[in-house]
Length: 166
Image (cartoon, rainbow, N blue to C red; front, side, top):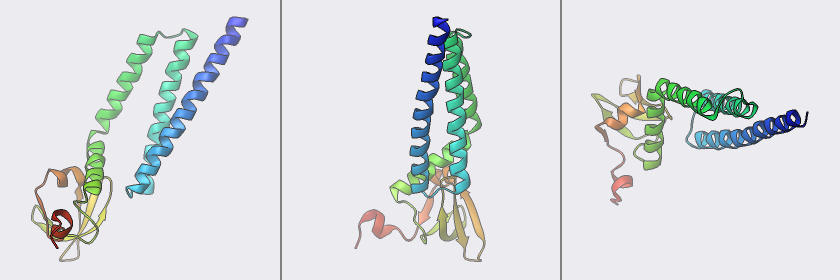
């Protein structure tokens, strides 16, 4: 019976530890996404993704502690799950990283006039996944951030800001 009680305490400890780590990680990512101007839907998706990752890791920890699975099997399963998720989200993650870079490099800002691939207009929104440009005809062009970053695009409004010219 003491072995069962010890295992139970270990399971509770692992689940509690991962709950705390997962919550801190989720809050950090949520704050970063809000600061970058992410939509509420994208923030919800980030929370759900972190929650799923937390559950997979916690289940793997419980399986290791109870002896149902070896450490190698649990690492293999979590590694395959991570690989599957990253391959499924490859384009989205590429757009998000490009959005963060556009935002942090100050390459684009709201109301900048840019030209990209024959589209000329004013930037009306820079999101984590895409940038919205209002064309001279009044249409909205939606361009993925990774596509925009692979350029070239011309920013007619940013010379002073980017080069420091008075």
